[in-house]
Structures are given as structure tokens and as C-alpha cells.
Length: 542
Image 1 (cartoon, helix red, strand yellow):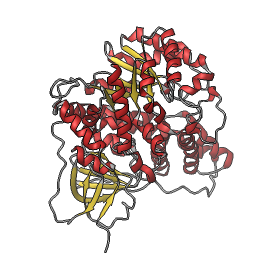
Image 2 (cartoon, helix red, strand yellow; image 1 turned 30 degrees about the vertical axis):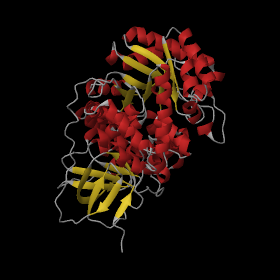
Image 3 (cartoon, helix red, strand yellow; image 1 turned 180 degrees about the vertical axis):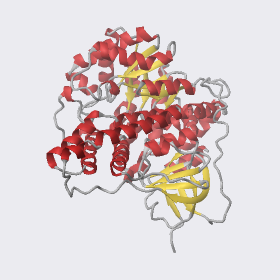
């Protein structure tokens, strides 16, 4: 008898059911032959195709808002990247291969570099593949792969979804999303939450699952075959916009609702969504395309553009999170056998203090320019000694508040000592889960281990919350765990004083916190901590 149910990782809450539509995978790999008769004329096909793709994505971004607009703008920038076009053109003329094949190979080089970088950068590989397929389709004059035109409300099933596809989804036509790949931090997860569509990712066998209609449960992560003649069930997402803008529980316990940003576009989207401030400002955007370290003045201007929408509001800036797993040319990182466990984050600064000091000088200047209430925190801190060293550098730069990220289990276990050295901490649940479970967060095969509802992960967060409460200092969460409205309540019950997330989740999380008391949050947290599995923890908290 055929299996009637599959399991994955629920990344966007709610239940919905209806007919299945399977999404076309990426475009077929272009052939290397026959070679063009005129390589230079062939190479000239690439730039106009890339320009058209970028223009379409930019138009989609202009019509979107929040996370969708930010992601589409980033994807459009990839399509317009002159280095991608230039490399593809050179491949055509040097190797006498067709333009479509050259675009495929050039994009492959970029994707591999991002994959080698790991972490947040590796999550952008799917974006490169999407841009690649769109440019190839334009060169060949064929329709790009992606979501087909939907005539009726449907459940979409795909290997993975490109950001442009996900950002353009109509909630009135898309009941739920199911993907074979992806994880809690994928674009599918982020955008599904932002538009209120239930989603389950890392569902092995989803594409070959013999079902014409599916029921999708984004809370527990199940996908079940149902009678195709049964009525369509639409997810109920009402109430997400009924937040009053104050981060607090129904009985007045303050839990700040903040946003994660990494560019001026992100910052504007977060401010528009009503975020009370920024809990994680990723500064890597300032360095990624730079062959040399950006000057203090260039950094200052770039940071000020992100800080400006939050004049008078709290913003936590993360210092450069780079190293062997996120290689930057000017840092000249040495090859490492296991870069995820190597010299990354704050560890880079120990040997290159000048890079950190110049960044802190730029942040201090941008603070003065923008009027934001800025604090700075370091990534990948493992010990109290490292935390104290970083805090000294921050204060020497004239920045009042210094903190660190809790991403390494050792830092969570030693949270009390770490908090003695700094003014606050912020838990990065994405990396903390990865290191706690020895499970690469980019690998779909182990995505269930990176489920933020894993009780072991919650227990580590609880230890940090207890230490912060005992010492009277703030402890936030800035990983994707914070964007789950039900999990945000559990985090409040664990002693977390702020939650920071993608812009699209701000109102839903704010409303969820406002609908319960602190005592209810604490009871939900106790139930989740006592559960044996992530699925059981969700059910117990609910």
C-alpha cells in the first residue's frame, strides 16, 4: 500500500489542503556544442538578456513590499552583476561555446564560491541558479522554469522554489508550499511566513509522492494525501495585522519586536512593517564586492543608509562575520580542513585588529550621522575572555553598548560569565542549532535537526534566559526561530527580552505576543522543554 503521509520541517504555520500543482525544476543544462560561427556576435547576446532579466526582477520588486521586495531587489542585482556577464562573454570568445552554456558555467563558478562561503552566503546559491535559468531562457527565447499560471487555489510542490517565484506568489491562489529541499532559513520559509502561507520543507520524496490533493500542516511538518473531491481548505491568517506596535505580552511584560536587516532596502522594509528597532544588522554587504577593505568613510556612509530609518530607535550592529567560511579577498584567509569550525567571526579580528577597529570607527560615525541608538555585537564568541576583549575594543571606539552573539554551545553553557563581560547577548539560533546538532543548516537531509523546536536547542536558550534574568541584562534571539509566532511565545517564557526577525513576520509575532500573558508563555516553555522531540514540543506548546 502506498504511503499516505510524508514528514518534513514545518517552517510557516497553519493548515491548508487542496489540489497539487508540481513546479518545473531548473532549466536543462545547455550543451557545449555546436560552437558559434561568430563567437563575438554570440557573446553579444548575453548582456542584453541579463539586462532584461534584471529589469523584470526590478519591476517585480517595485510592485512588492517587505521581505519580497528586499529579496527581489537582491536577485535583480545579481542579474545585473557585470562580473557575471563579463565572465560568460569571455567563455564564449575564449572557448567558442554557445552563450547559454557560457552563462551556465559562469553562474556555476559564482554559486560554488557562495557554497564554499557557508552560512548566510550559501543560502544565496538558489538565487544564483534562478538568475542563471532566467538569463539562459532569455538567450534561448524560451519560457523560464517556475510556477505555472494557477487556475484554481492549489498546493505547490517543488524541489525548491526560487526567490522570485516565491515572492510573486498570490496567497489567494497558493494554499501551501511543499519542497524537497530547503530549511528553516531558506527563502521559501521566510517568504511563506511573510505572506501567511503554510509551508513544509525538506520533505523527502515530495515530488514522487502519488497524490493529486494534499493536506499540509505547517505547524507539525506533515504532508498528507487527501481525497481530491474534498473541499479546499484555506489557511486562516487573520489577526496578524492587529498588532498595536508595542512589543509586549497581554499583561504588559516587555518583549521588544525587532527586525533583521542587511541592506538599506531591508531597513526600509523593516521600518514600514513597524519593527521597534533592529536586533541584527548584518554588515557584510559592505564588503562582499570589495577587492580591498572599504575605507572608513565608505563604510560610514553605507552603515548610515541602513541606520537612517531607525533614528532614535535601538539598532544592534553585528561586526564583520567573515573568515575562512565566508572568504573575503583582503583578509587572505588560509585554507582550512573544516572552515565552519575555523577562523571566522570575531576570531578573524584577533589577528587583524585594525579591520575591527576601522569598522567600529565607521559604525560610531554612522551612529552620529543617523541618530540611531546603536549597540555593537560580535559573532562566533565562545568564551567570556573573548567577550571581554571585544567589549574593550567597542568601548574604546566610543560606542556605549557592547554585546555578543550566542551561536556556540560553549557560550550558552557559560552565559553567566559571558554576560558579566558585556551589556547584552543575542542568540543566533541558526548557527547554535547547527553546532549543537552537528548538522549543516544548508543540507536538506539533516534539516529536521535544525528545526528550532528541538528541545535540546530550547534548553540552551533557556540557560541563556535564566543567566540574563539573574544578572539583569537583556538577552535577545535573532535567528529564524524568532519569526515563528508560537515559538516567539515560548522564547518569551524562556526569559528572552527581545525577538528579531525578517520584516514580514514582525506584525504576526507582535500580535501573537500581545494575545497571551507572560504566565502562559512560561507554561508553554515548560511544556516544550519537557518534550522528547521537536514535533512533540510544538504540540505541547500549542
